[in-house]
Length: 72
Length: 321
Ligand SMILES: Nc1nc2c(ncn2[C@@H]2O[C@H](COP(=O)(O)OP(=O)(O)OP(=O)(O)O)[C@@H](O)[C@H]2O)c(=O)[nH]1
Ligand SMILES: [Mg+2]
Image (cartoon, rainbow over all chains, first blue to last red; front, side, top):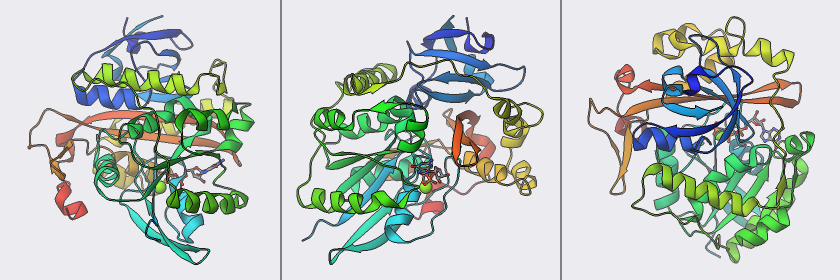
């Protein structure tokens, strides 16, 4: 499933990140890589997705959360 | 003695300007969101009769250069000759902020690591074996709390010693230059995990939004609401937010990070051609504070299309390159 579809409080693992090298560089430089464990903290409609990974709370734009495949 | 130039490198909000101000007596902008420092600043201090130059750099998540600020930082680190780089890592988010150390390790330049935010790490009951980390890296690792004055004598002494007898990080991530971006980043985090093995004990607990955080990040009432699409997506909207400090400042910073479409090419800063499909991006990280203690770290990552900012002058105008 997509990160954008996760329910709040669900725990999961990032499976695949789709995008060009630029996108990958940015997302990975803040700690989101394939295999990273995360917790969905907040996921409200039309709002960025709040997730917690590598001891950091991250807000990700919905369009970008669509490009991240996760397993929960 | 000729080696007297120190650069402060670190991810956004790691405390670089706080250290810079304390060392040099300057008053650079310090605040609780990333992207405050947008140009490099040079300052000076004298210690034991020697004059040292300190450069405060814009925060950057890595050295791959994704935004203007990151390019300034990467270009300075890679090309300008500072004699020693003081890399700030956030002890409360050690694994993530060590990514910068992984990138720097590939450059084989003299460094010291400043383990900043130790007060926050302690409050979170995180333990860090700085001595073991230092042995692994082969450079000094100094536990530090930039907001307190008592550590600065130790820092000045350490910087002076390292400038005369510098150390370079002795190991580096096994990055395959031909591999794709994901594989390269993964190699860097693998290296970080190796460096931190047995150094830190953080049984990553569940993240719980406190009641305060819930309000602060609520779509209706809080900062989270403030950085919803329409507010971040246009310069005009941000202008209207002026009254809402410090959030408006944070939004401004986030907006600055949106100039992602530039690349480092042959030693100069060069913008991507107009209409390039590459995206800009904004970061918005803020520390929600209960008085002195930061209870949560919010890292906002918002990507936007570059053309929304075509009104802004190109890189060359803004930084005089
Ligand atoms: N608790 C605590 N807060 C700190 C410490 N060091 C810095 N801060 C605070 O962290 C925030 C960020 O500090 P800055 O010095 O502005 O960070 P910076 O690295 O210059 O950030 P950018 O310029 O945005 O990249 C400020 O609110 C500082 O007061 C520390 O050791 N402990
Ligand atoms: Mg700064």
